[in-house]
Length: 94
Image (cartoon, rainbow, N blue to C red; front, side):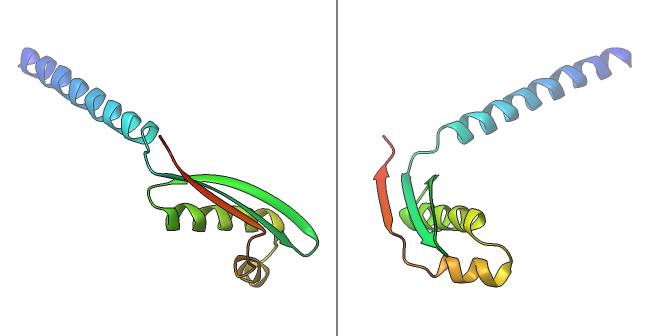
């Protein structure tokens, strides 16, 4: 009985390590698009760079990130996100 638990524990540990390895590999190997977005809002300017799978996803995430620094409150954040960026450059991640 004790031997069965020992084997099950070893197999469980191995499965956990394989799963963790896959998660780490996938999170470090994000191939896609890198976007840098700069916004001037209420007299303040900020730039942020974000990696994403698609250009639209990366651009939206960068805009949200910039507006988190430039605005306070939901209404202000929504107004910031509608502000056209002063600069938005996206490049493929190689």
